[in-house]
Length: 481
Image (spheres, rainbow, N blue to C red):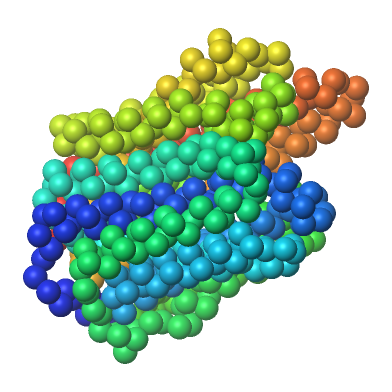
C-alpha cells in the first residue's frame, strides 16, 4: 500500500489573473527555449564538426549528450518538484541551462561542447519536468486551462520547426556559437518574468519520500535505453553495444516498475497512470512524436541532400509549417477543445498528420518544392491540434500533489519518443539508401527513396496512435482543484 506524499502547498494566496498570465508567458518561453535547443543544433552540425574537429560518429554526441541527460532525469526532476517546490526547481533548472549555454557557446574543443550539452540537458530536465505542473495548478477553470495548455502546446508543436529556421539563419549569418549564445538573453528575460509571477510553493521536503532507489533504477534504465537507441546509427540494431545497452535498460526499467508497485513512497505513484486518459495520452504521444521526427528532421534532410537547399534555406522552407502549427495551437485548439472535447480534437489532428506523412512518402527525387512540398505543409497544423489535446488528457487526473510527477512522466514520453524516432527512422532511411547505392542507383534517387521510406514508417506510427486514441474516454474526469 502506498502512502501519498504531502501536497505541494502555496505559501501565498493564489496569484491574481495578471500574475498568472505572466507566469504562463515565463513557462511557455522557457519551454520554447528548451525545445528549440533540441532542434536548433541539427542544421549547424556540419559547421560544428568542421570547426572543432569532430569525427562523423562523434558529431552525433552534440545531440545525444543533451538528449540522454534530458530524457533520463525527467522522472526524478518531476518528483523532486513535488517534494521541494516546483517553482524552486524550475528556476534552478533555468539558471543551470542558461549558464551551460554560455559554456557551449564559448566551447573551443569537442570535449567542452559535449560536457556543456550534457549540463544543458540537466537544466532542461529540471525546468521541463515541472513547467506543466505549475500551469495546471495555476489555471483551474476549464476554459483558462485549455488556453494555457494551448499556448504551452504551441511551444512543443512549433518549437522544432522554429529551431531549424533559427539554427540555419544564425549559423549562416554569424556562426554556430550563436545557436547557444542566443539562450543567454532569453534565459535572463525568462528568469526576470518568472521570479515575481510564479507561485512560492513548498513541498514536504525529501522526508516526504524521494524514493532514491526508484530514482536510480529509472535514471539508469533510461540512460541505457537511450544509449541503445542513439547508438543504432553507429552499431546497428544487432550490434553488441546496442543489445547490451538495451538489455541492461530493460532489466533496470523492469526493476523500476516492480519498485513503484511496492515502495512506500514511489517515484511515480501508480495512481498517476491509473487514469485511462493519462495512460492512453502518454502512449499516443510516444507514437506521435516518434513519427513526427520524420517530418521535422527527415524533411529537412530531404530539402538539403536531395533538393540542394542550404542550412538557412531549408530552415526558411520549413517556416510555413511552423506558422501553421502556431496558428492552430494558439488560435483554434482551445476553442475546439472547449466545444468538442480533447479526444475529438486529438483524432482530427492525428488524421491530418497521417495524411501529411502519407503524401510525403510519395515525393520523387526531382520534386519541385513550390508544387510538391509547400502545398503539404499546412497539414502540419494537425500537430497544433493534437499536442494541446494530449496535454489536457495526460494531466486530466493529476491533483496538486501529483502535478509535478505527471508533468515529468508526460515530458519523459515526449523525449523517449523523439529518441526512438530519431534512431529508427534515420536507420531505416540510411539502410535503404545504402542498399540502393550498392545496386548502382544514383545518389539523389537513393537518398530520396530512403527518406520517403521513413515518411511512410512515420505514417504507420501515426495510424497506430489513432488506434490508441480511439480507446480514450470522450470526457475525462476533471482535475481536483
